[in-house]
Image 1: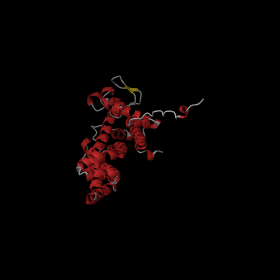
Image 2: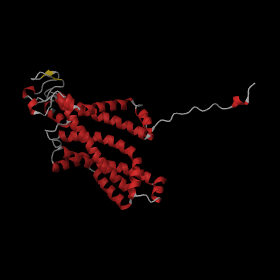
Image 3: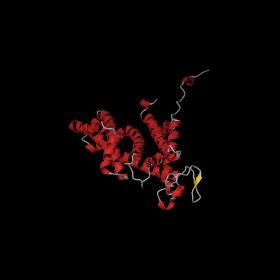
Image 4: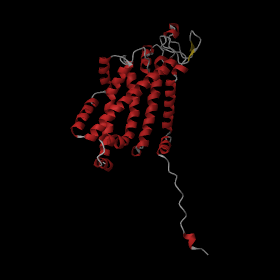
Length: 306
């Protein structure tokens, strides 16, 4: 005979709660393209950091160069006996070594300019959103003026005044990037500024710095991370363009843009490898960063998932 105990509902199975980091990782690896892009980017970063250890030669050490090794096809031998796997340029530089060293400069310039631009743009955007009024109007008019000009035009004018050099091109890249971060942070901060927890913090007479950095800033980080990822790729491409035009980095500081420019005049004569392989490395770098940025956008803001 059935008893009343048989009618009791089965105990609920406990649901495992994932930590935010674990959930982020699971969502990120759900995209094979994002995983591929991240793996390629990590390989590029490793190659750039370890360039002095894994490069066959230092391509900008004049004691290691021989003009007789100029324009050797991929797979050819140097006068010293080692193989030019990707060929050599007109001055006898090993293209593989040049790409490794060029990645160091290109990634360093892109990441450093993004870090400085994030700090300036974040500060400007938070200040405009939090205080509002005339301060907001002034900052956003400056941002609008900045964004009304093409980025490469502003960089060209600044470098024409400042000259060549790593520090100078970082200044130029920061000047054309900070406005993107300022507008992004301001838009997000304006939404958060009107929420109850910010009003409650103001009613408790908390200091402005504590409200901004303790409560407002953390909620502005997700879109800032996405924009920062995309802008790193944009900075690398812009630096390569400026160096290709001959006004970016000096010839003593190799970058992928300079390597592409060195072989441009030899393309029609069949020496394709001098420009092709640095261009391929630049393409892989930018595409891998954009793949990671696209997935970060979907993970950090599920409403934008495609």
